[in-house]
Figure 1: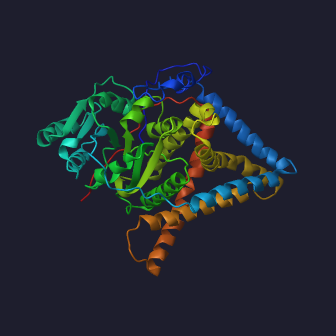
Figure 2: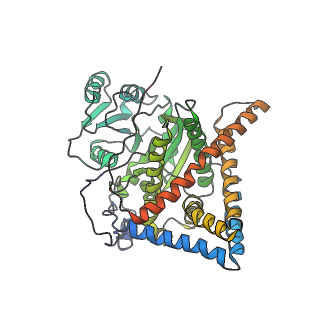
Figure 3: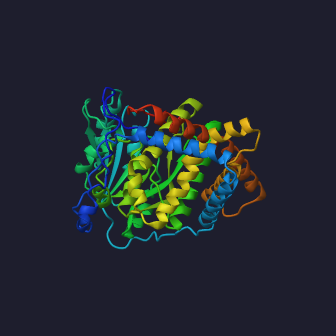
Length: 469
């Protein structure tokens, strides 16, 4: 999920009101059935810092209050019970198994890639995407060269001579918007009924399209996210942890969608129905995680997002703690931004009761509890008492470990499981649980920083090394 950008010297009034994406929706409800109707993207969110500061104040003061009032523990136990009930519903849900048979003609598909200085991986990517098991005259590959300064332009020129379905768009140096800007620029040039987005380091199986596209036969499906896998997962502790993290993410995505909850996009390997994308206004250039932002806008427009276990899209995992910190901090901030941007629409239940409740539960787990950890620890030390939030924290850690084990088991293709297999999965789960504790620090520090310092978006690129074979 690469970052977007706008100029460093860009200034704004922190206290201007947020112009919501759907501010005109209620006045235009009669247009919702009109395929030509397009919802406007929000102007730049101007009050994120103020909103983040308000949320931080409420969470911290509320946590401190729980230590001081007599009924604080009862409140925590009630919250733990609510989350526990929702967790049981999610865990025991039966995942959907949509038909993979295509009825009728195959729709036209556009595969989009925004590439900047990707000479190490661009060749393999193009050969991979241009050789898929799909009617050749029914899909196209667009590579957006975002003013690369390495050998990427020359490599693309050579590849365009070799593959008829490859098209290249070269952006000017002054073009802005980061990845979102690149995708928005190429979208009018593409003609697919379904638009897929891949990162430059993506590796996909040849049957990717014939497995994904049939899912769009269900009219409410606005997008499909395929499982992400780590190509260099055996390199070190960090890449092994990311492998487990992706298994956990896919497991909960499938379980949440099974109960009518929220499916989410993950950038690389996302497929979006053009009609849904146009209605939502394209990719938002004012957020640092365009995929997470688009997730909310699709659900607010009453589209569903499916998650596909097989085939997976492989990508390079970051290999150092510093790179992981920067990447995850960006993801955390982008995920938090969307709650600040669309909170009013969420509270108006535009997603529907099931999705709104599911979203609320996972917001508590992913953002509120880690943010509350610091004041909880401080009060426990000062008052020489146990952590007030330990019951709900223990529940979320148990949920995470159970999800990791189940997710790892689900993605393995072994027909028969031996005792050694379960032992290996247990070791991977324990290692993944240790790895996942970094999210507590990332989330708590990110939410605190967003409350006191305005963000200036810049292009932050993950360097891809390519195959080492």
